[in-house]
Amino acid sequence: MEETTALGDMNANMVLLGFLIMLVCQDIVAIRAFKRNVREGILCAMVPGYILFYASREETKQVKPVIGWLVGLTVLLMGFMR
Image 1 (cartoon, rainbow, N blue to C red):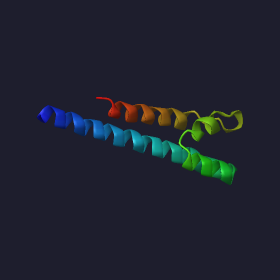
Image 2 (cartoon, rainbow, N blue to C red; image 1 turned 60 degrees about the vertical axis):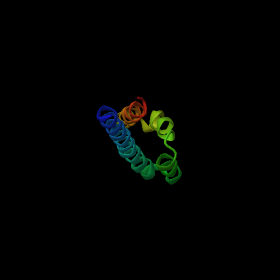
Image 3 (cartoon, rainbow, N blue to C red; image 1 turned 30 degrees about the vertical axis):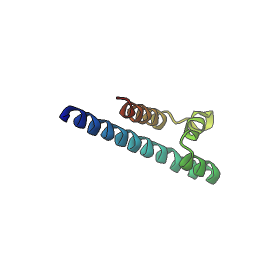
Image 4 (tube, one colour; image 1 turned 180 degrees about the horizontal axis):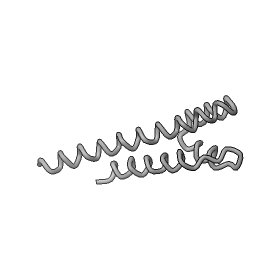
């Protein structure tokens, strides 16, 4: 019984950590997008997958925040697995 509780706590922590990593990286991209265009900034801040499109374009090439966002997504998904 104790082992399943500890595993559940670890999964919850991984979900929270992954979400926080994604949120920070998404905000970094959104702030940079707001400096270029308000519409792009709002889309980056509100639509989670939009940063993959925005950051991969040639004129706004941003690799590190996108890698961080993908790492956060991986940690979040690993937290949902049992």
